[in-house]
Image (cartoon, rainbow, N blue to C red):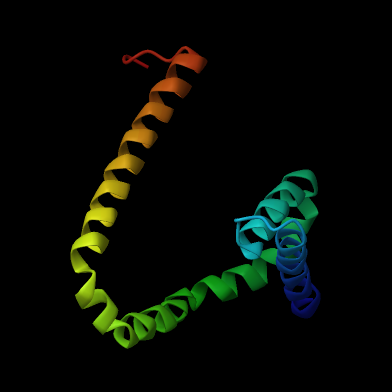
Length: 119
């Protein structure tokens, strides 16, 4: 049952990739595939039961997925050294922006649902 479940996950990635490339979207195909998979999982709960074992297996080794990123960083150290200020500034600014957007979203949802501070 693991092979069909893995095929389903790869199918969603493939669909996302094909749509992303066909429509020249600035969104990576795997991300679009995950959006489609979330929609499918919410519509068909049995699909979740089917892919859960393989998804848990993949998540167990998630740390290994960061090894190529580390290698890429080491391979591009000269570029990072040349642009460290711009990279640092963009990381700080984008982090602050994400915090502000998250807080504003929280406030918006709290007002939308009528939540009070006492709740």
